[in-house]
Length: 292
Image (cartoon, rainbow, N blue to C red; front, side, top):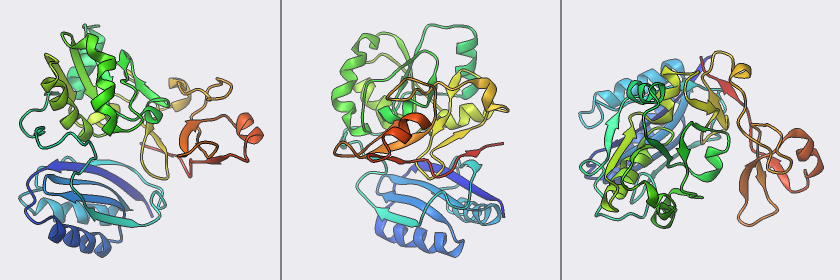
């Protein structure tokens, strides 16, 4: 059977997160889906895998709910084993930021721009900087041209690391992340910190590489499931590999879990270096699915 992974979020008031958590769990189990769903008073955030037919049935059920009717469901080919199980939780935030209640992503967020607009800015070589709001280990396998990364090991560190881009306060910046959810709060935070010309990529990197698989995003896109990365280029071998082995610098897109430090970290490691260090490294990549 063919499988699909969907990635989606929506900032919308959910009066009873626990009730919605239970409803989501029942809905996912009904359609045999695996993955992660997070529900909070501020909205919903999820990545799920199932057969093509069951994923579509889930989407149809979600769109029948007025709260979720306009959700942007991002699809990519699954493997049938992208997630080991189903996890549905109710939390304080749908993406951990610790930014507090003074950040309202439905009101204060940066100006949304489409993948077409961003591509046009690249093609015209306009003066702007891409600020990547992903974690540091996500950026090493792929990123946009003109990218600056504030240095976050996790998104909650944006409080401290935004000082690394203070020189961009009066410049045009475009915040990006995998699907857009982190940018909703990140751009609101940057605006409160005095950044004057803040934009965010609508639909995130995922939507851009769908439209422009051989465009100005270079490398593979890290994803939080067993595939580790996805690639939408017609011929990935022609786009080149931007990832470099942490130990020797050779090109690679193979993620490993490094258990030599606490907590364990993810990094890129070539086959040769992995063979030399297999006592402290574990392959993080379970399987890689190329999108079409």
